[in-house]
Each structure stands twice: as structure tokens, then as C-alpha cells.
Length: 185
Image 1 (cartoon, rainbow, N blue to C red):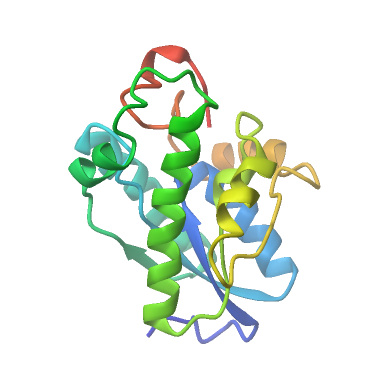
Image 2 (image 1 turned 120 degrees about the vertical axis):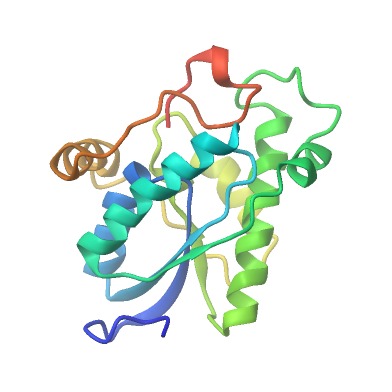
């Protein structure tokens, strides 16, 4: 069963990059009457152990809010192919836009498969990510809903909720190319 029996809002597929970013994003969607289905689809995260660590922390959040989680396959080779030629781009460059496109397209396809009309992403909660860029990429997909989760103090709220839930907060977006750049989520 995909929707929690306690929730009766409109279903939305939420692409989730990690547990901490999901906290305030989920809280806001619930407050706005949505019934989120969490979709962990992040083939950009490297190495696989980091991918699983972030997934395990998302499960803590999902349990806290009693929400379903869908784990997408980790296909790092396919993601590397999607950003090929942009490995040396600086953070916030074209590689990031290609990465957003890769992840949002997978979310779009999963929403279609599940019969969920709308989807969005937690990527906008990070003060290190440009929401306008994410919206520009997402708008190419029918059903994408522009939620700027950093608004309404979303980023700071995610820090508070992460501490309350004892979540691991990583110090970079997840791809091996940004590891040394120190950009947090």
C-alpha cells in the first residue's frame, strides 16, 4: 500500500536526496494537505555505502511521519554517463543541472508508473542549491510542482528536525566530483 491510511490528502511523489532534507519538506507538504510518497532515487551519490547511509536515515524520517518509501536502484554508471564531459565543472555548474535532470526524470517516470499526478523534490531545501535552476529543469516534466522548501525557514527547520531525530548530516551533495568542494546539502 502506498498511501498511509492516516493521511487523506492529495498524493504527491517526493524525490528525496537524504533524510535531513526530507524532514522539513515532508512537514510542509503535510501542512499543505499533501500525502507524500517518498522516492529515494539518487544514483549520483557515491560511494554505494554513502548512498545506503543516506537511505537508512530517510527510513528514520519515514517511520517518524508514517510514510511509505520507495527505493530506486542505484545506477551510478548511468548517472556518470548523464554527466559525462562535465566531471570538472564547478559546483552549481552544468553538471548539477544534468544531475537534477537525471534525478527528476526518474521521479517523473516513477510518478507515472504509480499513477501519481504530481511530484517534486527536496533538493530545494538546501541553501546551497539554486531553486530557480531546479525549477527550470523540473518544468520540463508534466506534473512537476515548484516547492521552494527553503522558504518558510525550511533549511533551519531541517537542521532542528535532523537533530531531534538523530540523523546523519552529510557535508556534500553526494557525487564524487563535489566531495572536496565542501558544499553541504
